[in-house]
Image (cartoon, rainbow, N blue to C red):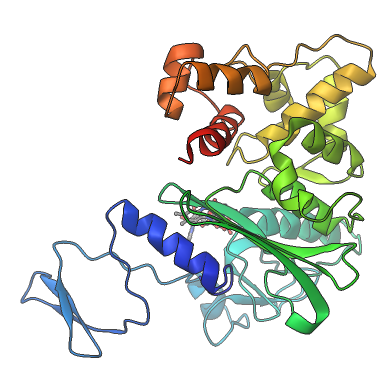
Length: 355
Ligand SMILES: Cc1cc2nc3c(=O)[nH]c(=O)nc-3n(C[C@H](O)[C@H](O)[C@H](O)COP(=O)(O)OP(=O)(O)OC[C@H]3O[C@@H](n4cnc5c(N)ncnc54)[C@H](O)[C@@H]3O)c2cc1C
């Protein structure tokens, strides 16, 4: 994943994957599929081979541009229907968006740029003049259970930035943030093993928000609810809280003000947190602080699955000597858990027991 993570992050990720029984081979050039009529293994350039019952080939995006190509539209040499910044193809009355569209030699393999392209295309079809200016490729995913995220510019040139790195080889966590040379603004970063700070860091990077506290708090401070919440409040109204469903901070606050006062109600009303769920902690913080700003009493519980604050939960996990998320949920929580309590409990377990 050289576009997303650096060598140290890669080493941590490899260890995490090996710990669950996977064998990872890199720089292994596959040259043949072995077997006669049925696959029995694969062979590599260096002469080595491994046996296999099933072979899965994951080879990036292949845009389905056959119809466009046969209709005479311009396509890229490696596929994709060429579009300009209005999403027009080489025929001005035909538009292309999403994974089949090739914009400035790039196929965007994510949902959010596709939505943005759709907006641009519709605007132009209706006579508007909005243009597409490329899209931030920040991404967060779970790689076989391991959090992997990269945002902004994960590798700015070393001479134009300052870097803070946190590495915990026991817990399998690697975090890196890149800041401007004066240490005042975030440029981007990488999170492996714990990506709970992703949304906040992404928004601070995209909105060019000045770092007000200690720079290292940007990396570790998200473990404190208070700081995370204060950070959410500092975001501008048009900050994209849920990038999967394109829901802004303003839309979430408005939903709360209109009476959608629980996490589930806001989810249902706005669509926020209904896809990957990564923004759930920020949505919850926004609900809490919008209610507080309306003078409403808010009991500071972690989420609907735990009737305790983070500090109370910390104490209970310690006193009862609970050692896994499932054990915590079964013993002092209820329901199936969610994207708010899972990372919070995991971070408590990590700080208490190093797991
Ligand atoms: C396993 C996987 C996981 C992913 N996870 C994420 C993620 O976590 N976050 C994220 O942002 N993105 C993710 N993506 C990428 C995301 O799914 C795509 O970027 C997005 O779906 C592209 O949208 P689209 O509308 O351009 O194309 P698609 O969603 O592929 O839709 C194209 C449609 O056109 C149909 N079609 C094709 N040819 C024809 C034809 N000739 N006639 C009629 N219909 C046709 C296809 O059947 C399909 O339904 C993931 C992709 C995969 C495969």
